[in-house]
Length: 360
Image (cartoon, rainbow, N blue to C red):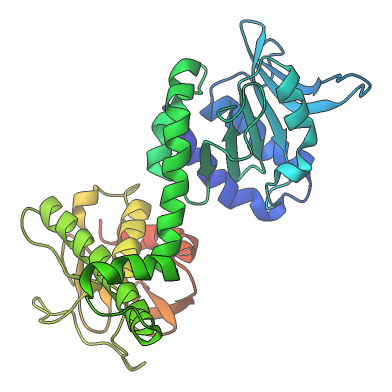
């Protein structure tokens, strides 16, 4: 199985099993060992490749154990400490991993709860595990930018020198992305002042600070919208639906009108666009992606088969405080299911696929 397919399989397993995994041992068996085997490519049942409960004797501390040691040519390359799924990952509760990393030849330490995987090395001080990971993988929200570095840790492509060479850059790029994300969500006073002084020539008073706090937040939202629209326009060959910074329209709960071919003034929001791509991914198991299209209106975004409004797959009613997913029965009668997050769209995967089949 290809690396991407194996990773996608583990994403599905986390979604399927995480509510049933009540212990650390259950997490190891259902998620962590399969990840080691399928994604990283090591034989989790071969003691020359993976040693569970690896004994780590340290001075007067005898019999301490690391959950898993990954070996290559007889040498320990990676140490893995496991926690129960959903448990916060903190180095304060990973003493064995930190201590044994210091005395072993391993250059990669891993702390995981099955869903989140934190990879550490010794960038700051040789032979002492860093306090911050250089690579973080969240199976509930996979960042595609980390996958090339993750492949370097797989058995077939293991390249420690390359990993270590890129680790410092990856560590700080990840930290900077998180810092930027925080500024986009809630701009700090320093960030607001930095931008304000580039465009405002007067004195930076309390009133100016309060004014620019709102302006900076609004500008950041519009900046992101503009960049998304540029990418869409480029991808669609010069034309694209307009993506708004946030839903604005408030519609009544009555039956929505038919989707019109042209909807002047309609803006496709980021949530609607993400929802469309989730629905496409679900339906891709039944038909080619090119057959799944969307048409937006002021009331809802319709997702159609073959761009035919007589073949509705579903509707996304996202232009109101309570969002709904509109599903269709065999008579094409719509039922609205309330949802609180985009992830809940996956719960209707079987219904969506069945709807597709009715049109084939």
